[in-house]
Amino acid sequence: MLFDLSYKLNSGEKLVGIARKHWFLIVPRLIEFLIIISLLIIFANKLGNSRESFAITVILIACFIAYFIYTWILTRVDYFIITSERIIRIKQKGVWDRDLNEISILDISNITLNEKGIAAAFLKFGSIKITLKNSALFNMANIADCAKIYQGLIKLKGIKKA
Image (cartoon, rainbow, N blue to C red; front, side, top):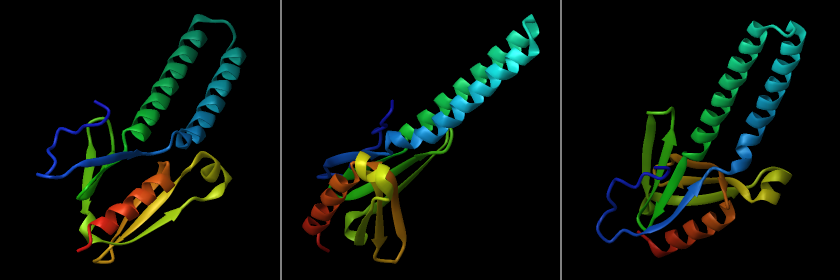
């Protein structure tokens, strides 16, 4: 399941939204992937038309395709669950390993929005930095629709005054 909501929400807690990393983050990996595939094809042409060179090329291309799919999956399954009481961060560290962090809306002291660069402004992604009352930072980096999520968090924080 792409969004695992198997843990229970608290009594009276409502799901407000889910924030994910922006798809644009995969573009540098895609460029690397295309360069490596191009180099492998050039390498295969230099080896000649033997069965061994063809087999090596196919195996290497399959490995890089698998690596690209793995990278894409890890980018897409990092997400934040925003509820009426807390923000839960799920960070996928591998296929079977993930970190789960959460903060209470009541512990938030400051929220800042940062959209860096033309691509981020045009494609509407950026980072939201949340400062907690104990001065710890909670970073929601490179998320899609960051301005909309920022406004929602400001509204939530306004409703949930300590």
